Image 1 (cartoon, rainbow over the protein chains, first blue to last red):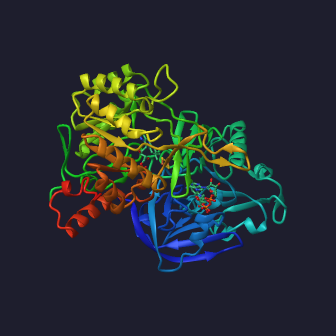
Image 2: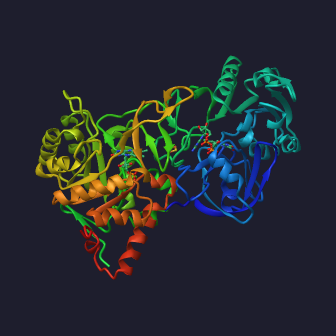
Image 3: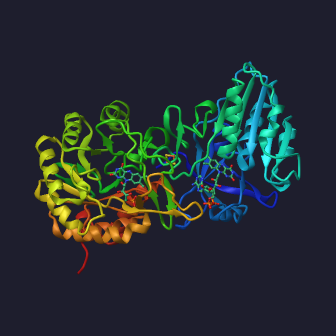
Length: 256
Length: 301
Ligand SMILES: Cc1cc2nc3c(=O)[nH]c(=O)nc-3n(C[C@H](O)[C@H](O)[C@H](O)COP(=O)(O)OP(=O)(O)OC[C@H]3O[C@@H](n4cnc5c(N)ncnc54)[C@H](O)[C@@H]3O)c2cc1C
Ligand SMILES: Cc1cc2nc3c(=O)[nH]c(=O)nc-3n(C[C@H](O)[C@H](O)[C@H](O)COP(=O)(O)O)c2cc1C
Ligand code: FES
């Protein structure tokens, strides 16, 4: 019944590090239309447990659609077993994409925690053609959780890393890296995705410096089509759906 | 093959519809040619005034199902008529508009606003509302059901479908109360009150503490309730609760349901209502049936 539901063949499903995977599937329709910040909703199996589909940001959409995921539970565990040629039941592309920077913006700062880096590769793919500087501030638990910086480097991003254990980059939270942010309200735009506490810290910082930005939110989703009203995000204009009104929201409007 | 069914004076091209609260944004995401194949559409319950809904978390998955505590977030009847009804009317499938008042007066006010609107085939009364002055919900008190249905029947220009809650001792008593008060049909079941606890935080997962269980986990109980109700009342029954496939829907029809609604399954498989419709047709072909009435209530005892 849905014009955005299709079955797409898996092209590859690679383990990149002890916890991260990258899955590519052949979905020309999605490649054509997807915008940075949008996501796909995948039915990982036909069984009843886990019951819901699982949402994943589109990580890249060039030849194929790529998702970058962390195996953390039953749904993503099943996803790790997908092989080349398997058909994936996908809804997408879904959701409101990021607002892209205006032409005046000179510095785009992407601030990610853990798997929250996923929507930023496609964002940097789109923005690298512009003259603006791309800066990625990335916080992870350990060196093993910091991936895949190579692709961001190729897109010309300046990368600054913080890890909880200091195994790579600065030791501590991503907020330790805020000093790297060029703070000009007219020419800097911030994008953030990660745990609530991290995005709240980014929001505080942006507010102090009067900078605008976008936050990509994450909530448990059932339909991902704006139908069930189950994925509410609290905002300054009331509850909004993460899947339909978001995942990208104005940074200043989310109440973390 | 005749698939058409009737509720009161309303005719539906086939018995398959969607359950309230599980279908939305048709114009953006759905192929409307396919939606047009359904027998009816039931939008999210609408109340007299806008409601913001419950604090998150509002949903959680469970074994073969889910809990929800949305809190009937909706724009209120005026917002619904301005923002949602026009696009639903445009689809062209008969609408069964689900309504809830926090008082009998509110119910009547909503009905009066909807009277005269085109495209509406029936009204579904969501009785999971407070029963003023009593501890239980209207859906749990046969006298309150009777009083409300009688009052609405006096003003409504449309057939009335009374939606029953399974959180009662004997759901057929509630169905009889609705029938005797003049309801044109009953629909069942709404969700089962339920709870999931986060053992690390020792808190209920849902912001509202309790929620309603739906999905395949409740299906056998729902089939039994539809069976029991269909044997006691003469008015049509709309059956729902965990329908994922045509086989599931056929269980409800054979148990005595005149129509079936697909709810939670929409979240997992947005094609589910159409798959159900196609599967019912195949089943009738297989058994050389010409009319859906040969399926409805055909259980051998
Ligand atoms: C818009 C959006 C984009 C996302 N993008 C990515 C991504 O690019 N890469 C990635 O690895 N993860 C992403 N996630 C998170 C991913 O959906 C969850 O990690 C996944 O659903 C976990 O499933 P599981 O069965 O493996 O683990 P579970 O044990 O089921 O859950 C582990 C955690 O994931 C959360 N979760 C569970 N089910 C859902 C659901 N249906 N929707 C949202 N969160 C859920 C739970 O709250 C829990 O904290 C995204 C989530 C959203 C909402
Ligand atoms: C997320 C969600 C929202 C719902 N909202 C409503 C509602 O607004 N009004 C209503 O009468 N029923 C509502 N229901 C109940 C369904 O219409 C249906 O009665 C119930 O879920 C059982 O069917 P199912 O197992 O097929 O979902 C809702 C159910 C879910 C899962
Ligand atoms: S997941 Fe259903 S509205 Fe967002």
